[in-house]
Amino acid sequence: MPISQSESSIYGVGILRYFFENAPGDLKNCRISCFPSHLAGIEKEAGPPDGLIVQRESIIGLGGGDGLTEEKVKKAGWEIAQKLDQEKTAWERLIPARSQIVAALWSCGALFVVFLVGCWLASNPFEATQRIPSPYVENAGWVGTNEWTIIWSVVWIAMFFEFMDATAGMGFGTAITPMLLVIGFEPKQIVPVVMIQQGVAGLIGTFLHAEYNNVEWRFKPMSETIKLWLYIAIPGMVAVAFSVTSVYAIFKFAMVWITLYVCALLLLMGIISLYQGVSKREHRYRPKMMIGFAALAGFNKGIGGGGYGPVVTIGGLLSGVPAKSMMAVTAISEGTVSTFSIIVWLLMLSGGVVIDYLLLPSMMIATICSAVIAPWATRVFPEKIWQVVVPAYSLILVLYVTFESWPDIMKALGGFSG
Image (cartoon, rainbow, N blue to C red; front, side):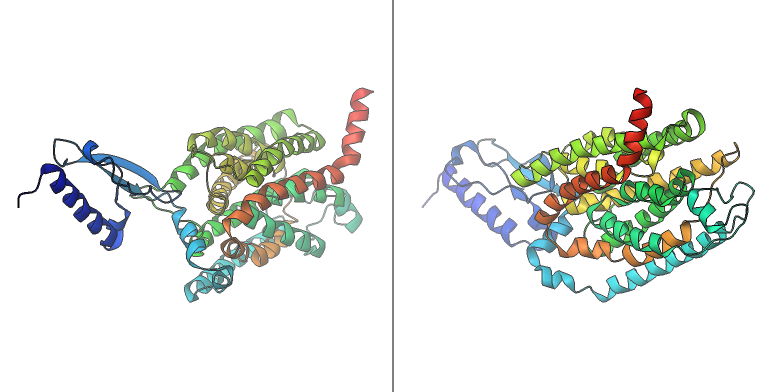
């Protein structure tokens, strides 16, 4: 019995659908997204999973010249974390694989090497490295000497904020800078050390986030995570070079004004992001929005050592990037920008700028303990938790930093009004 063109098309589509549903490997990523117009009554396939980037190309049509559309799915870089959340419970994600344990041990070794370098730098091996006579140094009786020691109060403080920074994508430089100022250290004892610590911790975190399946880095074909890194790192490096040279070598702004500016910025972004996270509103993926956030974050990083992670991480959430992978992108971006800022600081040494690395050994001990564990914590807890935790933590940071800096802020405002 002969069959009509419409019936043959239906049979053909049924065969194609069976093939795509049962094909092995990457062929399962292919989807039939539209059908010939005379088959409008047939149910269409569902779209691609969340986070996948789709390219559509016309392929040979069926019957009557009507075309099918094939959706080719490109790797965005955050599918691996989404798949892990879907396939394994938090308890299952809690147990690391052997390869992940080995990666953590290698990371600890690399951080220990930087700790040894920090011990060497703390002894002031160069003319431009000196013991700056801050209140803490004066109380310790180290003025005019090369003496130093591990400051355990700084270790415990840095350990907590580094853990939160590496898990939530923010908080180390933003929170620890005003606290160290209150303890009695000067900006030139804090900011360069924070840059080094964040540069090393960021690059180690980049490696561990990939090992713990929070993100995937792919250059060929280039994943969206790599593109985001470039969108963020390049403007950030330009901005940090401008802010470091302008604040510390040219204009010399008081630290209190820098702190006040960062607090106001974080308050605004934290409120917006927390509202979006609680309301569960989905954001359209707009990666080029990150260029503006990156420049602003780089400026913050250069002037105070902090205010980078909150702007980039929350900016990424507002730009439609999943929270877990955005924390990994923040790690690689901050590591890159901080490393570049170290180069800028080294170039400034020739211009007579003095740096004191007293705090670097203490910072690196804290980093060895926290930076390795934090990406694992990101892996364990589900995505929806981080969508609320990240902006909520940024608001807590604002309250904390404002409280710590309030006496200096009021003193500066009083002097300004007088």
